[in-house]
Length: 185
Length: 135
Image 1 (cartoon, one colour):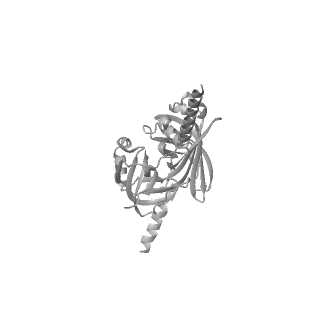
Image 2 (tube, rainbow over the protein chains, first blue to last red):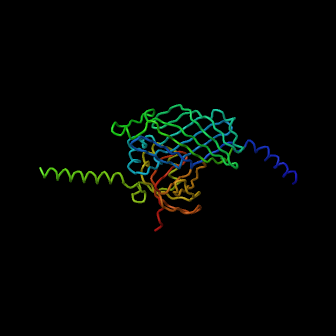
């Protein structure tokens, strides 16, 4: 009996370091902010999926375009129908890798900036981009954030001449996610 | 001459009123619209897992009435209620964000709600949800 307990304890300790290398959430936050002299436009999405593999540095986040909320219903409608064509292209996704994951220690409290490189896909267009990301570990809780800029033109999003002054060519995208350890290996 | 001024004035007022209405147009609410489909959370997710494109054609941007058991009930950073409806899939749930001010039932409750479908990541997402009261 004692042996069995000891054995299971040993097995548990051995299996611990390899367990739970993946972190993720289904309730991440993406905000975008377009600022021009004429108008500021912002929208929020609180149902962002994100997964970070702590051993390989694989990083993914994705959002549904129709889950972005605007203050004005009309803007939300235009965003979906005229610009993002979200019934045809429902998702936006980043799929990449943290360039130097060895510098990020998710087991130790601290703040770790790192760059990540990968493919950003939206509106049916994929671009390889490098973004600044930041990992924070506080009391064992992991969170990640990133801020980067997107030009609608790069993603074949055409903006009519009449509203050109209202929509920035440099839209700020902020991603904030609290990551939980995912079960499994 | 006077007549033209009056007509122009009338047009300006009507135009202004339409503009004002559009600018302040209320957000869509699933509650006020007729659902295109009534199904269980399990059925909705399995249809999406089987064929995402076909399911998007059927459901995206439309109101669906979904029933299921609440596995997680929480509040998002914007202050809206969010529930996850359990399914038999190991990966996915139906992720429902409620309209501002709408209250959700607690975890463990069997509910029916209406929401607007935004599509599928690993979960099916519904927005502007509100629960349908049992008759």
